[in-house]
Length: 164
Image (cartoon, rainbow, N blue to C red; front, side):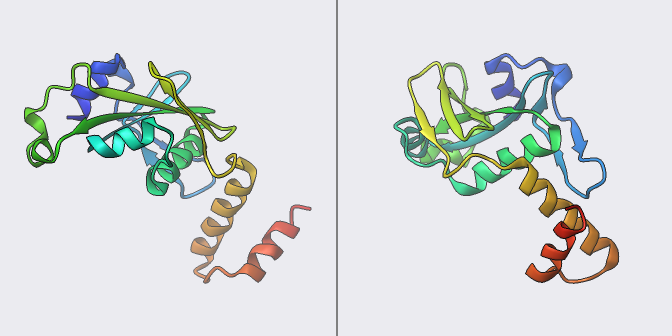
């Protein structure tokens, strides 16, 4: 299904299913597609959920976090989530669904704005993504894992102070 959705939105096959890791950390991602300017993620959702996103209601936190993590790992300042809306009946066997004309693309920017591609939407994430803070937290968790110690707020503050 993923390939059919990427075909529908015109993502070249040579950019699909690329694994990326953030150097110096344990952070990584297996992208649906990664081209020169953008990180792409593909999802299926119930039509009513996609409609809620289109009218500007909040995009689910887990999807937003996945996109922002992908932007961090890949170093891209823009990500696109391509969503195929389905009925409840179609969700039971999504491979019978023809995605032609049914895929909606949401464009995430590092500034916190989410825009629609080909339809009018502009909603805001709860706050702009702070890449520096996220990087500090990922590097701290990587260091904790390597030293086999449990993370804590106090040790995180000490970790940050060593770079000040």
